[in-house]
Image 1 (cartoon, rainbow, N blue to C red):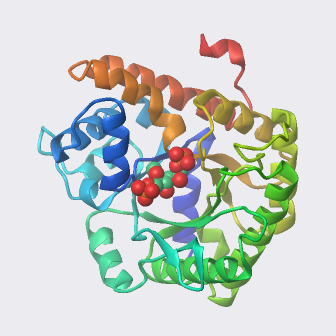
Image 2 (cartoon, rainbow, N blue to C red):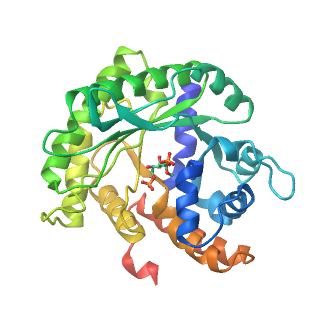
Length: 335
Ligand code: 5MM
C-alpha cells in the first residue's frame, strides 16, 4: 500500500494542489452558458486543454480530477488528455461517482450513487492512466439536517467506494461536502462537519481502507451564505483546524480543501491562514474547481483564441494557491 501513500505525497508535494476539472456535462454547460459560450464537446475540451497545457500545471498542480468525457478525449495535437497531464508533471485522476440523487426516506437530502459496476469502470480508468479518483457526498444544513440517515448512508458509500478504489491500486479522494448554502452559523457548520467527518472515518476503518493512501477533501468551516453570523478569516482558519484535528485520524497524510462557492481570493486567503496556524502533521492544500477556474473562464470566454492570455490568468491563481498552501501568500501579490 506504500505505493498509494507515494502517490498522495507526489500530488501534494511542495505546496502543490489539485485542479478539480471534473464538472459533469450538466454543470459545465451551466458554467459555459453563463459566459455565453456554447457547451459543445469541442469547447469543453478547448478550455480544459488550455489549462492542462499551462506552465502552472508543472509548477503548482499536482493532480487533475477529470470527468469521464475528458479522460477519453485527445488534444488538438492528438495527445491523450491523461498523457498530456502526466507530460506536464502532474497526475491524472477521475471522478467516479455518478452524482447526488434524492435520498429515499429523506427527500430533501442527497445520496451519492455510482457503486454498481464501479470495479469494472475503475479498471478501465486505470488503463487510461488514472492514478487517483474522487467521490463527493453532499450534506445540507437546515434545522433537521444533515439527518443521521444522510450522514450514515453517505459515509457508507464513501467507504465502499474507497475500498474498491484501493483494491484497484488508485488513491481515493474522500469528499464529504457540507454545503455553504443556508442560514446556519459557523458554529453549526463546525458541529455538523465534525459529525460528518467522524462518521466517514468510522466507515473507512470498518471497510479496512488504508488511511495512509487517501486524500480527504472537506469544506472549510464557514457561516452559511444566508447567515447573519459573520466570522473573520482568522476564525475560519482556526475553527477548520480544530474540526480536522478532532475528527481526522493522524494516519491521513493529506487534506485538500474544496472551495465550495467562496470567491477566488477568499479561498486563497483562508487556505493561507489555515497553513499559518496548522499545528498538525496533515498537509493542508487545495482541490479547487471554481476558485481556480473562474477568472480564467471569464477571460477565455471573451478571448477564445488567446491561449497564452488565458494560461496567464490560470497560472496566477494556481501560483497564489500554492503559495497559500505554504503560508507564503499575501494580498499584495494579487495586484
Ligand atoms: C468541479 O465540480 C465538481 C462537481 O461537479 P458536478 O456537480 O457536475 O458533479 C465538484 O465535485 C468539485 O470537485 C468540488 O465540489 C470542488 O469544487 P469547488 O468549486 O467547490 O472548489
